[in-house]
Length: 405
Ligand SMILES: *[C@@H]1O[C@H](CO)[C@@H](O)[C@H](O)[C@H]1NC(C)=O
Ligand SMILES: *[C@@H]1O[C@H](CO)[C@@H](O)[C@H](O)[C@H]1NC(C)=O
Ligand SMILES: *[C@@H]1O[C@H](CO)[C@@H](O)[C@H](O)[C@H]1NC(C)=O
Ligand SMILES: *[C@@H]1O[C@H](CO)[C@@H](O)[C@H](O)[C@H]1NC(C)=O
Ligand SMILES: *[C@@H]1O[C@H](CO)[C@@H](O)[C@H](O)[C@H]1NC(C)=O
Ligand SMILES: *[C@@H]1O[C@H](CO)[C@@H](O)[C@H](O)[C@H]1NC(C)=O
Ligand SMILES: *[C@@H]1O[C@H](CO)[C@@H](O)[C@H](O)[C@H]1NC(C)=O
Ligand SMILES: *[C@@H]1O[C@H](CO)[C@@H](O)[C@H](O)[C@H]1NC(C)=O
Image 1: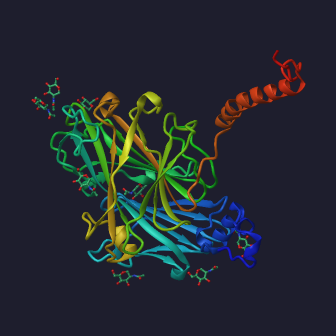
Image 2: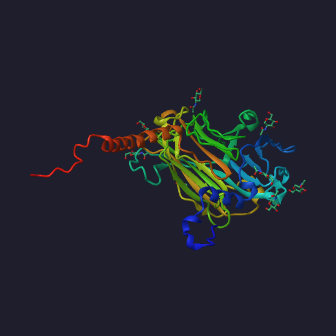
Image 3: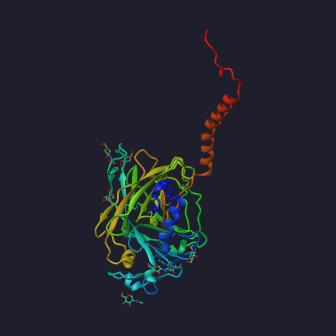
């Protein structure tokens, strides 16, 4: 990236500046992954003209030189297919008879096919529940007595058209198990609230993740379901498609700033390739109350990613777009510890993440923290400065050589 034509001048001259590095990275990045400041976003629930209605949500985010397609569906387990293209004209076509057939490959296509710069998918496969009553070790695995898991492929979901809100570019997939012998979900649900953005900003609710027009937010909320244990912990299993043979990589970013997410100094990221590529980003925190705050925050632990061959349950939309590709990787997100707070407080649990392409949004230090730093670094600086001035300008009492008799 940096060729030294005249080595004698020293390497300092040819060390690329961060701006140069960034511009080199950007010029090397495929057009569809460069990111754009603003996009024209539309949400459409695509109907099946012949069969029974199914939830298939298409979010199309058009920029000047690129289009992002997010296809969310509760056909099978809840899943999203993410496709980035290098043109503002790409479109999604759905062949329902193919999508609903046992061989759905080709049922979802983005045209023109050679405009696709990046594509991947997430599948939310299972919800686990553990009773942590007798668990004192917070790192114990499993974190408590396991109950039979809920397979999200065998759930029934509401009509997303009913909650579609063009003003906030959002909608909610709300579901409950089809077979629920003890009626745990009689008054409860698991909700996937999906929101797209036409520009950058930050929601009012913690963890207040910084979003851009290149991202889509998912909030997962478990509300009102009767837990099977007295101190139930929940775990969500997520499967994704790797790019090539390797699993996406997990990265943790640390910061001294918790202005937007109190007491959380970490940002976790799943990256599908070297940047810019696709990413999933979240703060390792969940909330046990709707008004998320420090008192109701619980840790969200992520497990390592493992390749899983022929992952079950399969998502029809993922197979429709990717065919029989089977380089799936999966991981678990575990919410809370036996120490609490927990779901048992208010029968409420929520967690959010961003999904996007390009460079993941990064918080700059917040004005508050910059102010605190200026004061903290400034005070000793002022003392030093005052001391220096005193020595220079003060009475020269000790400065003269005084011979000792
Ligand atoms: C959702 O509701 C709309 C109208 O409100 C209807 O046209 C569509 O068929 C329904 N879809 C499902 C999945 O029930
Ligand atoms: C889009 O492409 C045009 C022509 O190649 C270029 O001038 C413009 O800067 C690009 N816009 C963005 C947002 O990348
Ligand atoms: C849709 O898929 C079916 C096979 O499932 C195929 O016979 C049909 O031609 C396809 N329709 C279009 C418009 O491509
Ligand atoms: C989009 O990318 C393809 C290759 O992936 C390339 O052939 C095509 O020229 C690109 N289009 C634009 C508008 O950059
Ligand atoms: C916790 O331990 C007590 C006493 O050993 C036992 O009776 C109870 O079933 C245990 N509960 C769970 C959830 O493991
Ligand atoms: C669900 O709510 C109804 C009415 O509020 C109540 O009668 C019923 O006991 C609740 N069921 C469960 C399982 O909590
Ligand atoms: C929950 O706690 C109550 C009272 O402490 C106890 O009677 C009950 O057996 C416990 N339930 C489970 C599932 O551990
Ligand atoms: C997630 O956790 C469950 C329960 O502990 C386990 O059976 C499953 O294999 C885990 N999945 C992954 C991908 O680690």
